[in-house]
Image (tube, rainbow, N blue to C red; front, side):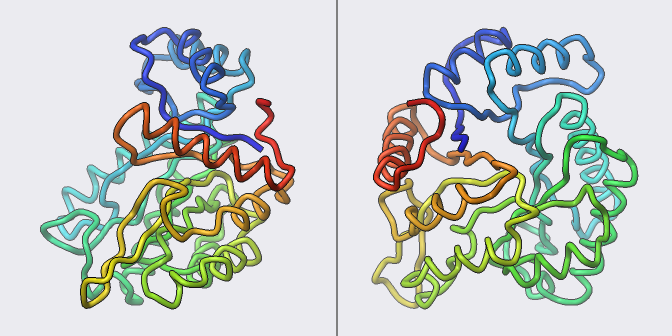
Length: 281
């Protein structure tokens, strides 16, 4: 398997960046900053990371693809098209985003229309538009399942895959985002299994987070560092290890190098107990 996360090396040199991932025990990376028009740097990054056997897991395209303002929506979709093109040129496994939201104040916030047929159809059409504009040969386009926007379950993602009907549309898996009630919280194992049973063949990259339930009413769940919450990492790593396409597991949303070190150590310890390896031991 491959584990990855941010590095804190103060350099723009692709060779040094790639080597810094190896020093951290990572065999996967987030894409370094690069412009689509900078062909030389794209090639340099691609070559440097390939030389160190570090896969560029994903190019982020974090923006609202279903914004209610049509001008903003077009600008955002154009940005995603650009990011997918970068992913394809640089040899990344995917370009990833979330669908966005109809919320007028928070680009990724809750809204009652986010889980309607209207949202499903707009998301489907937008994904098709992005993929058809780029026609990627290597990279996939994927969106994360989220708590309050489609796709919000393995079932709805499977429906979206079928509806989009594009080979370049794949799955980015972050099961923490699906833990949205006490029933799920106390049985993350079943949620993880369902994700892999329904979507495993299409998974191109994964995120590593965790979740904790607090005792303040009504229900309050928080994202937390891997190992500090309830997500069943034994099941997560077991299922991930069975996928032949070897999607990387990317640690995210922590604040300091020390936090990333702690999260990385926990994930590697769980893997070791299971007799699994991230190829860096």
